[in-house]
Length: 228
Image (cartoon, rainbow, N blue to C red; front, side):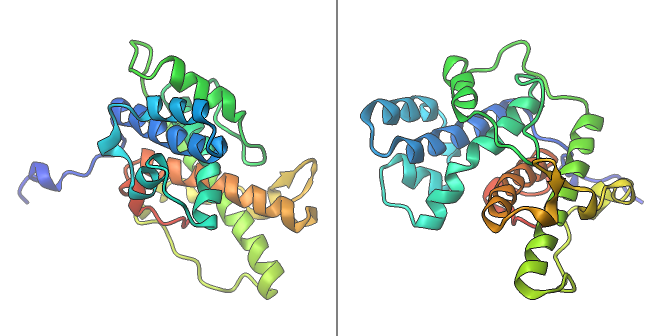
């Protein structure tokens, strides 16, 4: 069998510079939603995006341009500091990734990037083992929260859910993942939290999943479906 050519070699992790740029794009567009038109905050968002405009997704570009966003689009964008925090953790700038039940302090995430928008000598990706361990934990939360949502809306979890594009990546880990029944939120089983809290948990874990899948180079950012 011949050796794979460069164009057929699939990367297994993003480059640190790309991780920082993606975090800046996420924080900038989230800040636009938080700003509500406030000129000072809008200026901070523009500063974050300065120099990386070509890396913005179409929706992020519309947000930075001041265009009106659909309600669902703006709502999702407001959670992007969760995925930005995952990327900052992956770079070693934050000691811990955001948890499955609590969003990070959005101001702290944004300030980190505003104060240091460029790469430093300390910005290095965590070992692959840590990134994969995090991916496994994120998938457990994604499965558990979506299963709970299915139970509440349909009474069953029998609806077939899609699998990751990169099945090989998790083949060695999935059997060790905790099940949804193991998940607790605010000190109580996931099944006991109210619907509004469940929606928050799903939003948090959608962003954690998005960041994890992108970090491990499963798909381009804007092409990542929120599937577990």
